[in-house]
Image (cartoon, rainbow, N blue to C red; front, side, top):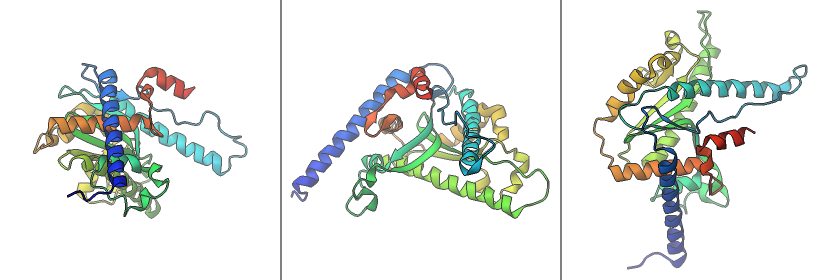
Length: 289
């Protein structure tokens, strides 16, 4: 018995067409830009995405805007540190694709989640579906696993004197990163609950010898990437990501490829236009200019 109305069937057909278009675009991106046989990650974009401020306001009159620009610059530099670390990783166990600055809209989420209830969702009302629903600094697509990394620009309190203000700031950045990480994990899980996802928060300016300044549970501290991990990223990756990902991996190859292609297409799509040139070095240069 047909229980869906004509408008509902039309919406379903339109949604499926868009979903298949994303899969096609993602497959094209993978075949065009991710075919390297090198044992190094494929970095997308091929250079860190430029978000720094080219010209600061007059330093004699800094004001709030100037201070915000300084913070943004420092945050960007922290991301670049992680980008360079991942770029130098040795990955003989399979191809890894690193997406820098991944974000998705609510519309893209509902394309992935076939069970999403549009009628009861306030984010689906009006033009809200075009708003950003989640983002992370790095999303790594490995062979049948996924890794979400959020970067936080914080430095340790080297005075040796515990500061409640500093401790609260650390706790706040970590809690915020967890929420951001979970958003990406939710997107991936909506496509297949069997997807294996590892989540980490990187503090590239924070040595592990100061880890006790994080007032967290042990399992939470285990998700922090301190500055030290960059010294031997390949070994760290093997023991913290690859070995755990080998256990109970029930994700089929076809489903993995669909998720991979969908994530690639989402990363390249802005306002319903798939900008595949983002994957090229020429695209990076043009964006910088």
